[in-house]
Image 1: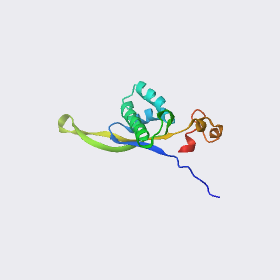
Image 2: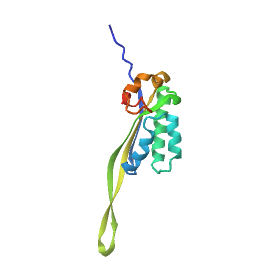
Image 3: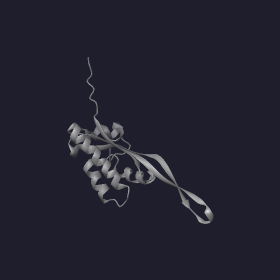
Length: 144
């Protein structure tokens, strides 16, 4: 007996060396992780943080990759993975009084957004509640 394994197709977008601290970007990423694509766009457009704009561009880019390359339906796209890692810190010297200088670190971060198309029967299926720690977003834990 042969088993047919359906591979879960994912699309991603990676933004590297974005000029903001990883802590500020994580504050926004935590709000959209596990949400549907269209819902996350509304959240990002209405949040008052500066970190929203580069994250919004990455979510657009990941969705465009899925729609154009794989023919995904944008109503069924879910953000299954969104992570922020620290990047390199560029160091600058600021002149101070009496000929001294202070070191200023300009931090960067790397942001990864992964989307997956999920069907409605997968979304509503009650078996997913057993896999999830968060009953509001039951599909996150199973597809990591």
